[in-house]
Length: 128
Image 1 (spheres, rainbow, N blue to C red):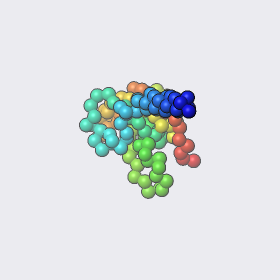
Image 2 (tube, one colour; image 1 turned 30 degrees about the horizontal axis):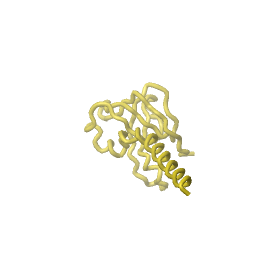
Image 3 (tube, rainbow, N blue to C red; image 1 turned 90 degrees about the horizontal axis):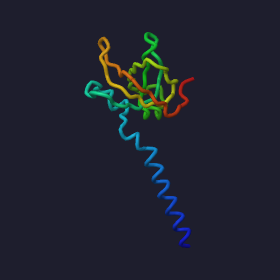
Image 4 (cartoon, helix red, strand yellow; image 1 turned 135 degrees about the vertical axis):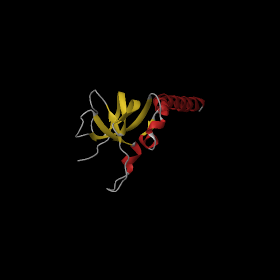
């Protein structure tokens, strides 16, 4: 009986440590809906988590991303906030959940997030 309790306790501790190690990095990332309301309030380098929505037809270095929570909306009248991201490297695929590190910059009359690092977390099958 004591051996079984010890094994269960060891499993609980192991699972707790594994969860803590794998979720530690997400604590510092902001979400698209957090930064979208007032992007210029965020100064310096930050990390934003979202889902890649598509590439701009006017500029192939800009893509849009929306908040991960918006994946739950299944109706056509969702009011998703799209954050424009400028990136000079390989583009993520549509549906990729990404962590983008960079800073906000003014481009013309608007604001975009200038990414210097993109990490793909996983892919969500969205679209056709």
